[in-house]
Amino acid sequence: MEQKMKQITLTPIGKVHSSFTEPLSMGKDYETDPEGWKTRMKAYQEKVRTTVSKLVIEDQYEELLEGIEDFSHILVLFWPHLMDPERCKRTKIHPMGRKDLPLRGIFSTCSPARPNSVLVTAAELVGRENNVLLVKGLEAIDGTPIIDIKPYSRNYHLIRDPQSPEWMQRLHEDIGC
Amino acid sequence: MEQKMKQITLTPIGKVHSSFTEPLSMGKDYETDPEGWKTRMKAYQEKVRTTVSKLVIEDQYEELLEGIEDFSHILVLFWPHLMDPERCKRTKIHPMGRKDLPLRGIFSTCSPARPNSVLVTAAELVGRENNVLLVKGLEAIDGTPIIDIKPYSRNYHLIRDPQSPEWMQRLHEDIGC
Image (cartoon, rainbow over all chains, first blue to last red):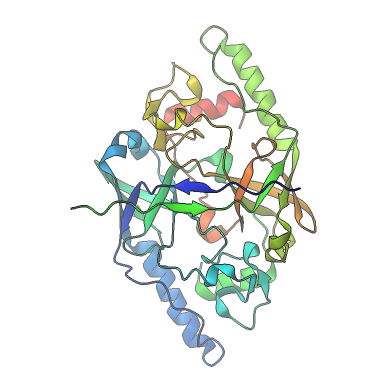
């Protein structure tokens, strides 16, 4: 008999403080107004790129940050805590809710609603004040629990020329990233 | 009073099948034999780059993989299950156990022993057979629980010119990556 998967328990190491206060509502009106949707998403992406978020790490972990300021970028692992658990049970979606894009399995998309919603973003580290890191490029809302901070590693994280399907290229073009 | 951090529970979605059967033992003899250490690490890195691992995803999640084969690279999130929990309580280390490199906080290193040991590797996707993904470049030992599979995203994961401190550049040079 197949051995049952053993559960893993995580305790967040801190929280995001951000001017993003609610999850992006997306795609509802792409079909009726594609250009309006694109304009709205481009503005949102620009806001993500330029907004500085604070990663407030618990005091007990401050020492673990020593030397992080020597990296230009970090990998932030976080947990979208406001996600409806029912959404995480979906198997396939139209990326960003767009019916004009093909139905794809959740693991083939960047949807935050996944069986284990550990989200990973490479963010620019713009400063550190003791237990607080200042980063740019993080699409996490205020209060989001942080799971891990890692240096962005050329060895583990950098793929210079990743190939993606046509639908994702179209999406990137539409949202300006 | 500060609200206590709420725990997060994950259930692995599959397991790694690999010819790597035990964690890399490293650094013990760097001081006594630096050149031997470098040679051994370079050989190990080369093995990591060329070894094909199987990601065996649970049957119930097979549908979630639909379309993943259209990506050249994926992000694999996994859990180093053989890690001694005591090691995860350390605050600072010499990277890869090398006393010649500066003592750094765990969050500033790529050590797998962390408060939440969710490891992240960008791997080349070389094939798919139903619920099994074949990847290159994954340094996870046989039996490692898989937490998530994501498409490698130019938007969330690619930093073209990340800057790292001198010690990490030296380490990369020494291990040939």
